[in-house]
Image (cartoon, rainbow, N blue to C red; front, side, top):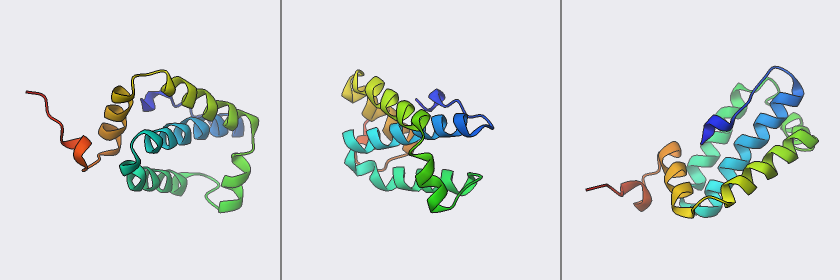
Length: 106
């Protein structure tokens, strides 16, 4: 799922990539609220590596049209997938320890 990222060195690419990542993480929390702590930790870890890791720069990034467009596009794409598939991908990616992360194939 996170293969959707297209990060580059320009502010345009960074805002688009950030929109995709946050769109995915927020959608994961929407369909599986128990993943909220893992999603928040993932966002925090990503922001620590960002060239503009201060709060005002991150807030400004969210106002760029590429960020908003990417965020909305990834949310729409995920909404068209079966919920069980999205939950599985989110759980596997974020390493959840809740009940959804304990399902096993037999």
